[in-house]
Length: 255
Ligand code: PGA
Image (cartoon, rainbow, N blue to C red; front, side, top):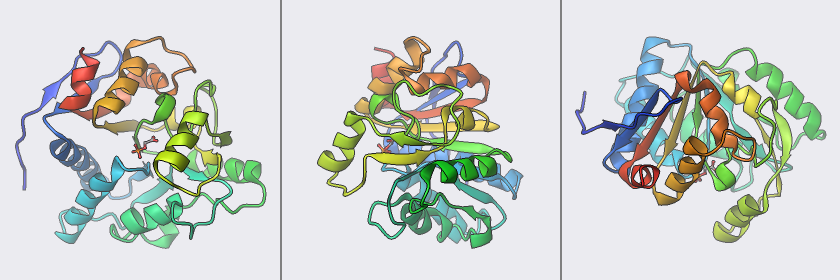
């Protein structure tokens, strides 16, 4: 079913598409629609899936569409954006667990098409290297959120723009959010696709709602392009970037 919703755009000098929806529900529908259309067009599409609260309703929409037989993800290839390290895939806050529960199983993505980041690998550096080689075979769509310190994935402030998948030290801001605000038992390190790795995707879909995300985006989109603002790197490849936001985030952007 095609639903028509009110949609507005923000014109930006580098980012080709910034779509504003009146509320979070509509932003979720618009972003999931984009993913569904990409899979309908190419059944073997490779997708990097971000995790986090932003993505939960988006992936629920994808699951609904699969259940309704609108779209078939079973030949798509799935990749992680990041994973805590060291952390067990059975851990409550593991991103392997998140993706299994919210993406891989509900979207019927077979195990052979799931490319997992191993938070239990003995050597995090080697695991990052192994994973980077897999991702480098080519990602069609990288789905991203934005978080503390304008991070993308777990690329914190001052991560080089040409960074590859690596073991990252999480910033104090991110650790505070995870451990204090969210009560997670997660460590202060994580494996993450690097900024250079992410930017190589053929297309990038960033999804953000609410005022807080609006503030991160405002700096990233209108401040200096600098590793101090990891998300500002998206402006270097802005012609393949689409950002879907709700009005609350947009009001901060245009303020
Ligand atoms: P969130 O995380 O969607 O849970 O807010 C986003 C991020 O940290 O990149």
